Length: 120
Image (spheres, rainbow, N blue to C red):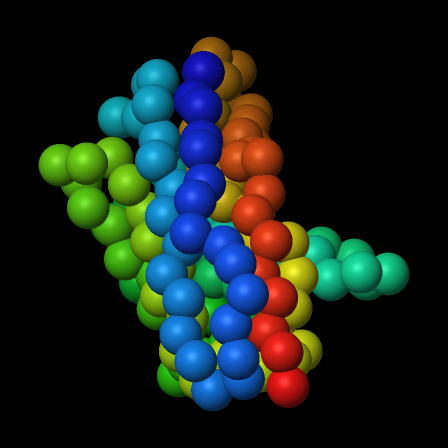
């Protein structure tokens, strides 16, 4: 089992920056990927970016070149650095992590979500 706790959301003006943090605990050594989703009001949850273990980080086209996912293994923490924020980035941001159970089926863990509001 893995537990994820997010922090760092808030209100920011358009063009500003925020950094979200996701602290992982539990069986983190078996994680295959971590990343971020977001969900805006009235919209489906969408992938922001994913960082597979040992692979390249991928981003949604809407955030590419503005958002960066990084990981601090010593702190068991994944970050989402968001620059040049736009009003359309307003959403609840969720950290997620994936591992495999004993039958090799993927399991997804979610953080509680953190609100990011960008004022125009």
